[in-house]
Image: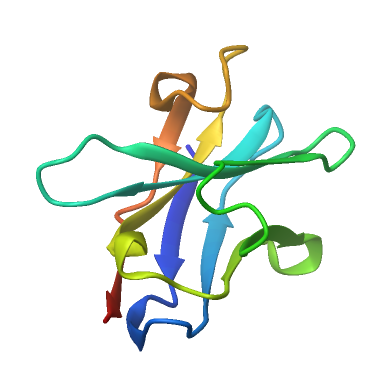
Length: 124
């Protein structure tokens, strides 16, 4: 199956930037999209962004629109999440995932493969 590995997390001050990477190994041929989710302690995993393979369209949570950008490098088999103007409320473990079902991109239930996550901490 597809294996996903996130990297690029770390500690930044409010207003700073980070770029997260999600490297995929194995065939991703059957997936519909790649998504980014995040989860803070004691909270549900929430949708952040998604890139639909067919056409390259993107979706973003309202809370990150204008600040985060999802993109891909096909040659490196990698998806990125550029995070600018970071806020303390962005602090969470960030996960990438492959979507295989026809469910909404906003729902974790629509995704079949997950990475182990990378910690993002934004200090105030």
